[in-house]
Length: 155
Image 1 (cartoon, rainbow, N blue to C red):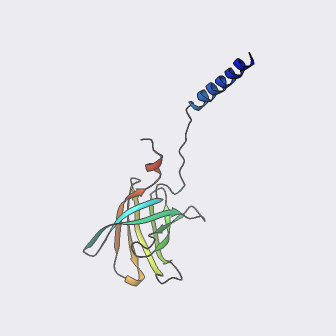
Image 2 (cartoon, rainbow, N blue to C red):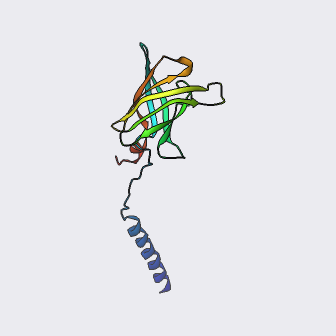
Image 3 (tube, helix red, strand yellow):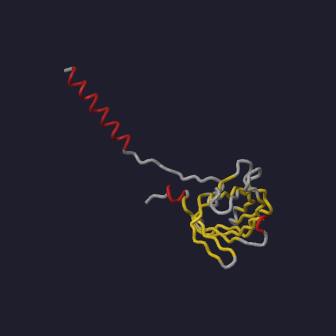
């Protein structure tokens, strides 16, 4: 009699585990305050009559200090720069003037980023000018290479 009760206890415990594991979980997607600006972007660049299709990868990520700026960082892929830019999250625009990029390195330069804009959460455009190449405007544009939507949206 004890062995029958013992077997039923395991059967009931197993049935309980199956019932609990089949319950549907509710998921609320949350984004960082800098979304949709933050992410990795695949860019082309244009300067003068030259168009370079790349792709060049640039990351945009939030600053830990405040919610009014983000970092634009090319990790040395285009013209080694890392600039803190002011953002308007309502208009999805960003810019900075003569930001000292990569201080103390051999690639230290002043960078001005203007006309920065995120379009439809998955496209980007901005213009950059570097003090060491004054007068040349680099137009950078492209699309999101990776981001929250790609990984979090159900397929």
